[in-house]
Image (cartoon, rainbow, N blue to C red):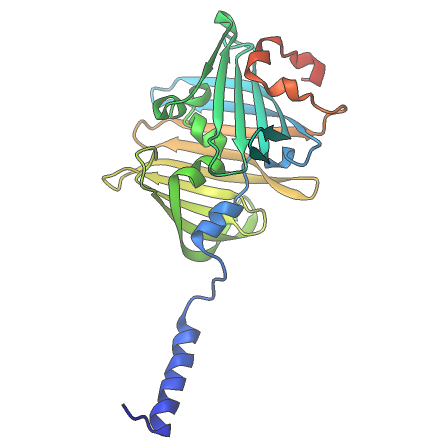
Length: 288
């Protein structure tokens, strides 16, 4: 096929015009998901973190319940024979007061995707530690809220179970702030483990944490919404302080508030985050 100079010039201009009309995104959906921080990742710098969490649940029948938790988080390096060392974020949540006094939720979140995260629940009333292994266990309501145990685990669980596609960039209002966000759509990988048939996430471009989540079932019905309504600052890093979770099927609404973030006065012992040590955790030793 022979091309004249006029034809080549026309093709060149068409190429330029096509390039100009394409989105200028320099990042993919999977890259956004990989960069998205977990809620407690500011404890992964080796100094550890202490904070408090209040959860209030408003059920559709008018009942209201509330919980207060003491949270201790830190990072560690795991060394296993025959395997390269890898980093892990460890989070311990202790229930303060009420019938659930002394109950503990423990999370191990490895940075490597090929290594599964782990969750345990210590029930003080029975002196029993149970590992939450099955999808049904991890989809259970945390503190009776609309947040599941998997929701508390955060970005790691999403990275394990979903492939992400970048839909667009936009500006989202959080309180009185305007935040630039990536909007990504998540679809399950080839696994039956995913809780939702489709997820849409709004991810803050600066803080690299999600500000809104919508979860849909196989019939394309919205079943879960999580919305960050207030951002705070901890050591020059923006963090979610208040988020609201809505179960659109039941009408239940939960509000989670994180506050009083601080560094521990002494290094946190690694034994603190072992499931066999949960019964001996002394919450008073950490100023709660």
